[in-house]
Length: 127
View (cartoon, rainbow, N blue to C red):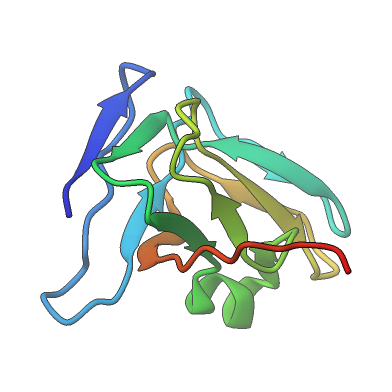
């Protein structure tokens, strides 16, 4: 399986695995300037990339970074993000600040992890 990554912003970074054993690849904030997430607020953070898998039998899942959550209370607004195999727009990450303090996302910060997973399609029918 191959996953084509297209930069849709000039300062976007291609997702990278931190180590050869990493299950996911880091997603980076494609920001021109720092962005504050007030305590209790949600902000959509652009990654500056679009993805194109070479098969429709996969989905892209976006997971929170455990360090951001445990150290700063920053996690995904929707728990796990789902990117369908046929979505070609920019991938954005909804972050929520669960802490009592404002948090600032810097340009290029690692904000989430991307994982490609196989999908089994079910044929649903009403009875």
